[in-house]
Length: 110
Length: 122
Image: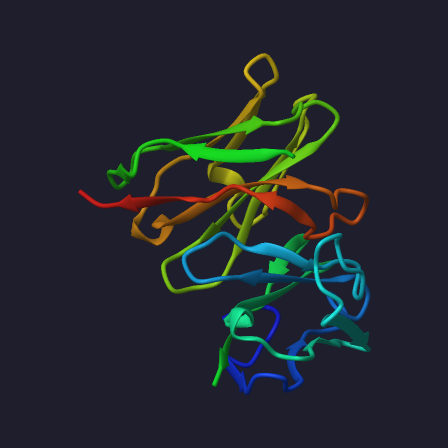
C-alpha cells in the first residue's frame, strides 16, 4: 500500500487532455513539494516535474503539474501515443522521514 | 551529459548480502549526492538511500538496519550493500543523481541509470 494514492489507470485519445491525480496527507503533499516521473515501457523513470510545477529542460510544455492542499495533479495536453507510460508522483513524508512514491498510474493512449 | 550504469550479480541467495555498484561517467561524482532506488517487478518505486561524495549518508528508515552505501571517488563509483536479503528484495535497482537533499530531502532524482534486476532465490 503506497503512502501516496494514484489511480491505477488512465486513458485518453490522441490530442485529448488527461489528468492524473495523486492524493496524500498533511505530512507529505500538504507540506512538501511534489515530483512526477514518467516511466516508458522497459525503461528507467525520467523526471517530468519538480517542485510541484517546474519542468526540467527538454520536457515539453504539454506536461504540467499542480498542487492544492493534500493533492496534486499531472496534466498532459495534446496527448500523443508516445505518452503511453507509467506515471509516478513522489514527495517527502515528515512522519515517515522518508521520500515516498505513489503506486503509479498506467496511461493508455487509445 | 552524466550517465549512470549499475552493475553486480543478478542472483543472490536468501540471507546473503546484495552488492551493487553504480559507475558515473560524463562527469565527476564529486560535489553531488547520489541515490539508490528500487522497483519490485510490476510494482512501484522505493527510495533506499543516498550518499554525498564526502561519504555522508541518509537511509530510508524502513531499510536502514540492512543498508550500507559507500563511495569511491577515485573510481567515480558508489555502491550499495543490502544484507539478509529475502524474496521481498527482488527488484530492479536503480542509481540516480540526487538533487533534493536540502532539508527536508526531496525525491528529486535526475538522471537515472538503466537499472539492474536482482533476484533473490536459492
